[in-house]
Length: 266
Figure 1 (tube, rainbow, N blue to C red):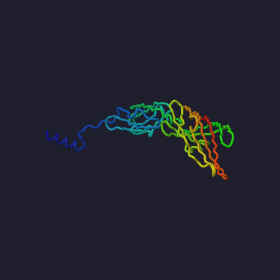
Figure 2: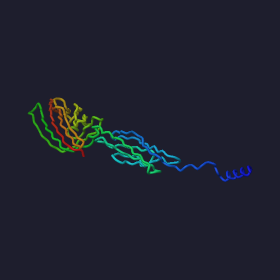
Figure 3: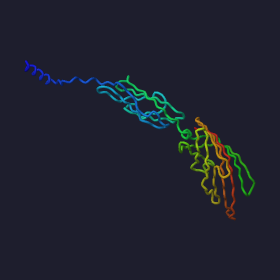
Figure 4: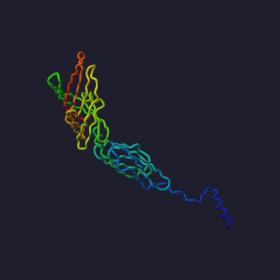
């Protein structure tokens, strides 16, 4: 009898029986998301989905932006890079990860985008009106004045979190071709540091040089808001020195340029 049982067992093994129970079918039991909960304005962070389950299962997920603004690097995968927008105000963003294998298993993740630095909110080109009061003083004649109103545009580029570069045409562009730095304050005001432009030859006989806040000029001021309005008031001094082509005598002329700009970002 024992020999018969042994023969039957060997026959079963020869037919492919492993003697081990079949593995259970794969199943996802839980999805969670890990990552940084605060991102700087226009910054990015990597979020990772942690998928748990039994048996053989798929660990990839679908990624969705449920609320808030920003950009996702991909729609499917075990991880995703979230890139924040320019945030004039602090922004709350909610993302969702959905299991590819079992859509009933999901996870949500909420992060905060920090408010952008003040200088970042000012970047752009502003079109508006520039008024100029030009008071001319020359040793050879009386003081004269001229008022001018013109449509013009200025561009602000970011230098740091608290500083932008102001550039444009007109006297500003002539005196400071690379622009001038402005201090940006959180209270919506701007400051003009004292600036001395490069002394340049105007023509064969004349030199000229621009100054802001010096000599004998009131400090420049400005204001801005998050809706794209810009107001600037400053005084430029233009000093011009010319040499008479025949006599060699020199003459000096000073322009005191009181300027005000009011514009809106395009």
